[in-house]
Length: 279
Image (cartoon, rainbow, N blue to C red; front, side, top):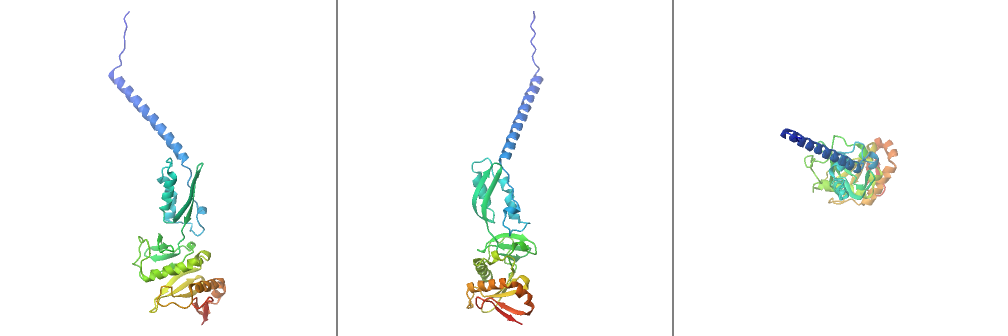
């Protein structure tokens, strides 16, 4: 009996090897996609809606606020240091002052953070610089008009070329330092927080003895604030008296607006009660 052994031709073995290689590659690819899908599901949801932000933030938000939604795409969710990465990303945002907590429960990631509120919008070519109480720039906002939802006043500098979109803080010039001190006084009295949108504009009136500052308020009321503490000549009224006089005007604002055509001047720098001079 003759035994006949069949030997596979070389081309067959070559094709078989390719088949095994492709099959293994498809299996690995499928396994990787499965793992990626599992990790994606494990990452959790990161949905930041308007209800999560302070009420004073306009619905349009800002580019830097919207950037908070992109944080999940920049961290390694399967890393043991994912929480540190989230905190680093949050603190890298100019609006975030501090992060109180970060947690992940099931498919949700949440955080509690302190968001700084701007006090003034400084006008520059092309838009406004939103400033904090320390004279730092929070963010540049494009547009000729500042959204009223911010509830903060605008300030037009005497020279528009000093600040730009890239500015990070107010210059060390008298005009800006006086503005900063005025804003800090208003913040001390929580005027802008308790009465948003009342002060619409802050104006500086250059004088030889020291600049005078005027608050342009709702209804067209113009309030003479006077000089700020670092001016060469300071009026007798204390900053506390000015805040008290300002709150008096706010409480009587509707009555004052009705008779505003007959008002020549409202001064906040002559005591705790405003001095109102009629025409």
